[in-house]
Length: 192
Length: 291
Ligand code: SF4
Ligand code: SF4
Image 1 (cartoon, each protein chain N blue to C red):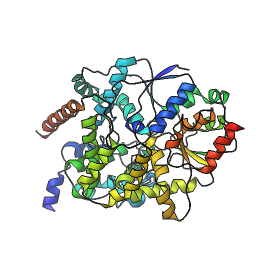
Image 2 (image 1 turned 30 degrees about the horizontal axis):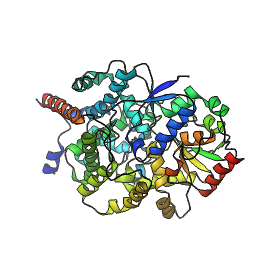
Image 3 (image 1 turned 45 degrees about the vertical axis):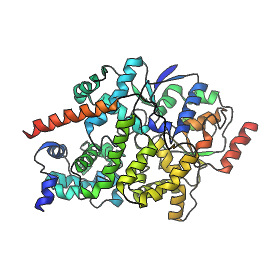
Image 4 (image 1 turned 30 degrees about the vertical axis):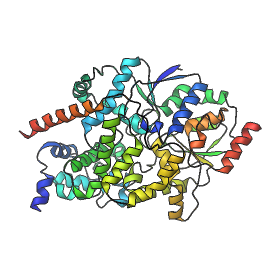
């Protein structure tokens, strides 16, 4: 448990502590769970997840599938009687899990990562390059096979091209670098 | 009604949703409204940026708003993709981060001061254009077709700007303007599963299945988002096999439906690029124009 907790970090500082403060007003009514189209597939319901966050049980949270299964439909956010920013918190947990490299969320983290690398490089998403990179890094054959039929259909329609012409001259590299620097600065300030 | 809008197509309208792009341009052309593409626009961050860094998500979207502001600050921006719409709109709401965002944008000599309003395509079609203008120009009446209006999530949640976020109705009068009927169902604002179809396939398929099962009895489904469209049309085979029923149904983008009803031909609205069409619908469309 020690080592697991060490990589996961404590809830007393930084982003996790801000997230915990954000759910302080939760009354455990379960409206979020009742609204969630993905609740059927979750090991912990959204209501339970917010309870765990209040208790600071980060190990439990990061080993659950709940936040990864959020498809950002915003129904819970719309209906929560306390007006809590729940969808945003789900995204925040995805970001924290990715930052910590937590193994059981590797495939989702890799997808986000591959996506952003693609955007950083090209300015606009080049879907072929993205999918190739994602599935190669994932190193599993199942998903690409499941998606291959679709890829072929899209290519036949001319919607996916092995190499999409680059239209944007934007330099997103600079934007990504500048954001990273600002965030490192803010993290540093928070820790000290 | 305005005679011009800035236009942010977003990445998918150059690839998997190129027919949405084509139909939107053709429809607004027919309505004599100019769409001026934002020069040098880039990706809005999709859902990946927020799941990685909130500041990055804001900055990727803000860059496009700053470009739009520099280009024509008094025009509204028309956005056809619901995910792009949410990301761009979030920047305008999130004033607490404005200073940090501007620090990043300044590296490119860009700045956000008074960005143009961000508006969903459905908002502009239902409130600026309006059903009456569509009804005036019908060249291929779609009488007798039953259309299931699918809104999805992010065009109305979390920002319910132009319609009810739980039981939206803004497509109804537009559909009726074509002569078609609105298919009664409760799935209009349900989630299509979004990126689950790539990362959590079995969960995504279940959400798609529920929607397609509920659409039985309709002649077609209309959408206003590339992600919803792809999820509802591309997995019909897999979902039909899983539930043991034939759930095949044509899925059209709203501008395709309106454009066809206004007499545009299939090619002009990108119809050959759709993945789920039926012979019955094609015959109906061809028959309507002849008769
Ligand atoms: S809906 Fe809001 S208050 Fe109710 S359990 Fe969920 S987070 Fe808590
Ligand atoms: S936003 Fe996420 S957690 Fe909330 S109801 Fe939708 S899918 Fe469930």
